[in-house]
Length: 119
Length: 113
Image (cartoon, rainbow over all chains, first blue to last red; front, top):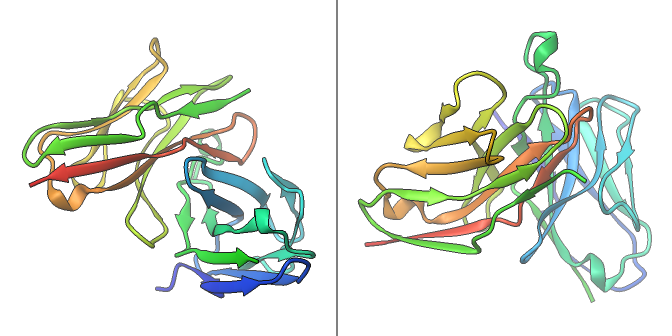
C-alpha cells in the first residue's frame, strides 16, 4: 500500500525557474494539503483542497499555485522560484470519519517529503 | 487567531524514565488535537488524537496524551522512554469550522542511553 507519494524527492532550481511537485494518494481521501517545513518554524500550510476541482489558500500561499484535477492527485507549482522557497515540502491527505459529528477529524497521512533548493 | 504552542525546543530524558512533551492551544469552539512524530528524513507519522470523550488518549508506540480543557493543554506522555523514541514531535490542531490543521514548531526529544 503506497499511501502518499511525492515526486520528485530532491530538486535544485535556479532563481526564476518553474517547477511542479506531484502528490498522489491511493487511499481515496477527500482532503489534500501542501505544507512546507523550515527549521524552527514547524509546518506551515501553503494550500489545501477539500475535494476534486477545489483548492484554498493556507497560511503562506504567495508564490505557489495548486491544482486538483483528479481526486488522487494534488499538484504544487512554483512559477518563478525564489531562494526563500528553499524548503522541504510535504504533501498530506486526510478523511472524515463516519458520522456528522466527526467531520474533518481524520488524521493526516504524510508523504516522505520533497527537498527543494533554489539557488 | 487559533494557534498551537510547543514551549520546549528540546527535551532530554534518560532511557527508562517517563517523558512529557508539552503542547498548549488556542482555538475557538471544540478543539481537535493531534500528535505526530517525525524521524530523520521522513514524513510525519500520526501518534494519537483527541476529538471528544475521555481526556486521556492512548496512541501508537505506548504514547498517551492528556487533554486538559482548563489549562488548554494536550501534553504527550510515555511512562518509560526508549532510545528509539528520539525524534521530532509535533502537536497540531484543526482550525474550527475548516479543514485546515495548524502545527506547532516541534519539540526534539532525545532519549539518552
